[in-house]
Length: 212
Image 1: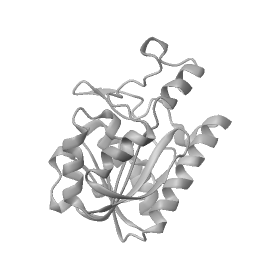
Image 2: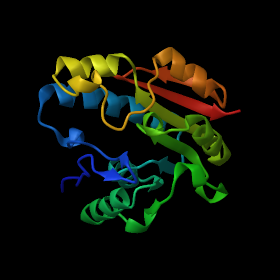
Image 3: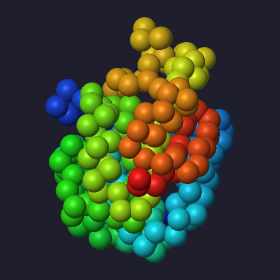
């Protein structure tokens, strides 16, 4: 299988986007163990609601949208970053997936056309200056279910410090402007959605929710 091309943490409109390394295809055993936990939990939540259509908001370079397309779901994805979507289209073409499933769009500009059985918004909320506004936008396009995930803080930063990364910013990953503990994130999401299931793949908080 062709490798996924990544953005390597480039900046667009002063916002750090994408991944700093290809964590999905890393050979490091610790990274593989961590990503296997994230992947198995996310796949389990997706299959548990049997969606016909999936829309990934903040899809980045398209790894997950391509994955679900290859699994037979009617999946599409969007990202505010033109650079990320350009890479997503390249990755889609390299994996035999229709490139038209990707589009450039801000989370704040979602409309009814973006509605799907399952909305997925993983590793996005921590990058947003206005997460409350973003949740209102996500609420409008969620017809049935939504899955959201964010780093579990302060565990995320502590683990970064342990591996000697981002020490000057106390372990904060570049581009992360919001920081929630599991309890804080559940409380935030509960204001807009009914939380059905809570997962904690190290070091994330992952929620399956339903539209109220």
